[in-house]
Length: 480
Image 1: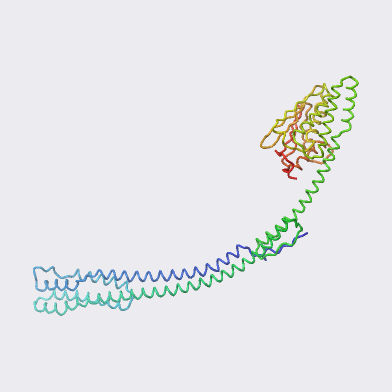
Image 2 (image 1 turned 30 degrees about the vertical axis):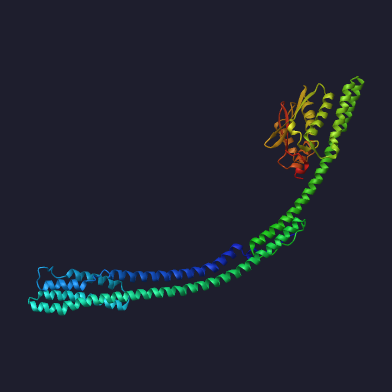
């Protein structure tokens, strides 16, 4: 069934939706915050400037009039306490006034500080005029009419300046508090509006996400109960959910194909097991064994004949294994031992054998008739064609949490080219190497592709067939 997808451009990514929601809230809030910060900074600068003016004005000598009047009086009467004209006091007041004039912004304050500047200049001129006057009475008259009045005005205007700046500072503080309250109310109002918009947008987005996810959950629940029919993907506005739904339907389609493939593999496994059973119950092996029995009886070797009959009985009993597909390594060892006992009686001068499988391995399982084809190959293709007595050894061990069974012969061995051909026959479907290939495929079907047979061989040095199986004690642990 083909699955129809909506065009990618028609979908909106969830990340894009979330970014839009964040921008919807964050941009207006950022604007409000910037406005609040800007207003606060402006007020802070203005407040600081006025406070600085007040601080500077507070440096003005509070006893300016008394100090200047007294020093001028001593100067006029030519007292021995006279320090000369108090020009420094006037210049100090003038410098303070000039500094305040450049930093003041209010009209009333500018007018007051301008008056201070002008009066300081006049005061200096009047002091110079007194210094130039020689007559005592005239100097006293100028002192009373000019100096006393001017110093009084300077001090008065400086206090007036302080009054205006303090009043302006208080007014600015009140305005700042009022404006900040208004701005905070506006910010709260905007925040409430934005929160409402965010909640509405979130609810809308959540429905676009939650509803398809609920449908996907229902679909997965149905799949879990065995409903594996391929359906049309759930249509969603969010791209990620659409991809998820499409992926689920693709998964179901692949799962159906995998189940069909596994069913076919199971059929193939059954056919392979049947073919293997037919191959193992070799009529020639039975005929030859019976001929050997007749020869033993005719030769009077009754005990050897009885032993061969017992081995033959065990061999076929273990081959059938009451219909089981897998048996323990212990049962497989008994089967191989029976087979080798029979073959050793037939080929007394041709072969010896040794079976060395540790006791702790015998509880583990493997496919039935795994080792018999391997041992048969070692006998007929490795040892029988040599002109000397051969030896077959079957060993077992645990390595990297796997069971390694090795069938080793000291027969003819194989060239590198022939070894590669036999290795290749384990995976192809050629007629050659049917016995080993069947064993290899049965192990992989039952346990997985990482298990099976591997071969090592050298010319005139023999062959080693390595059987690798997992450490399993029950057929319920197998992959199939």
